[in-house]
Image (cartoon, rainbow over all chains, first blue to last red; front, top):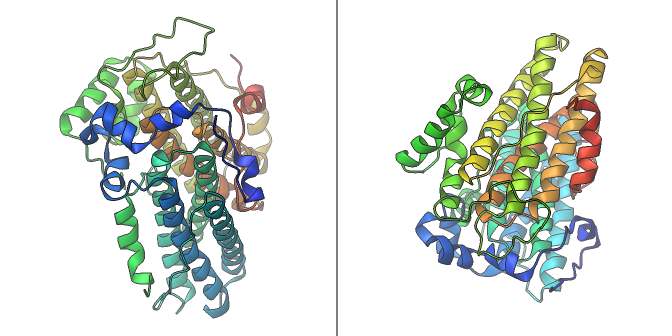
Amino acid sequence: MSKIKMAAPELAHVQVDGMTREAFLARSAIAAGTVYGVATVGPFVREAFAQEGGGDLEILNFALTLEYLEAAFYTQAVKQVSGLSGQAREIATTLRDNETEHVDALTQTIKSLDGTPVKAPGVDFGEAFASQGSFLETAQTFEDLGVGAYNGAGPMIESKEVLAAAASIVQIEGRHAGVIRLLRGEQISPSAFDKGLGMQEVLDAAKPFIKA
Amino acid sequence: MNESKTRAPHEVQRSALDELRQEPGSRAQFLKMVGGAGAAGALSVLIAACGGDDEKDTSSSSGSSSSGSSGGGASKADLEIVNYALTLEYLEADFYQQVLDSGEVKDKKVGEVAMEIAENEQEHVAALTATVEKLGGKPAARPTTNFDSVLEGGEKKILETAATVENLGAAAYLGQAGRIKSKEILAAALSIHTVEARHAAVLNSVVGKSIVPDGAFAKPAAMPEVLKAVKPFIKS
């Protein structure tokens, strides 16, 4: 019964009921590959499995990179988008604060696991802040991407504490996505199921906003 | 319209669908209603990965909770979680159906949102039912619900209740995430969890509540808490 101490106190409440070491090992990509054969593990895990396999720390750093991007995006948006409506401004501010908290919590979690948190990436959001419309459109891209990224990584997470933290965060990303879509007059969910995305798929989508 | 593309081989989708079609009654009916292929197809990928020669728990033996022994197949505990989720989805689907039938929601935009959510919940019911069957389990029965007190309360009460139910649903899925043993079922649960989260935040926004009532980290709800909260709406 190995218990990982979460450094981030905000995450303490998301720890869930006990599970044996075997049980969460069985959930790891390697175990699944052994049991089912890699080919049958399915699209939810296959891509990421092929590329990474670096365990929870890599997943956490992957998530941290995305959260850094999102936090920077909303921080700049609140300052730069001119004529942001009351509701859009309120949402942008809430999202900025949430993403910043995610960055802090993930950074502390990585440190508590003796990992090295990735640095904040350089960002370039192009013309996203030219108008409220372009801001919200890009925000929707980010939030849907965040949902897919966490949902794709979730089943590969070995530690139940890290999984609980990731699931707690992805619910917030889902909430963001829904509200942005509502404000834009879009379907609040593109599908009844938010399919997980592979890491490479996510990184490819995020790349245009990363400046090296 | 925008069905997520599944990459499963066709025969996999067909076999899951065939199973569903053989089921008379409500399941097959509303599979037709929501455009069966999409609904069943979405999770057939997951289901396929769980199938094969996994231990099949019939839901007969009661009591003992020894399950985590085999290396990642569908355990009895996982089946119970999927059936728990199915019960909640039945409740949600019924609720929206009754809300839409009541004609109490007058606002056009809100009505469209309710319609979209209703369709999502119906797809969740279909997918979870198919998942239980594929795992060799017995799907939970559709509960008999009673939302009269809510419906009689008018639009405001209806929307507030919808928001409460969605926030509870999201918390319920979050509460199970760490307990699910099969990674395929976990992936399925996660894919539904964030859709409930979208619903919750949108409805919170509609009724003027915080879109993130727990702050930046969502709180889970355990099974007894959730079941107690929905009990008033279940007649049997």
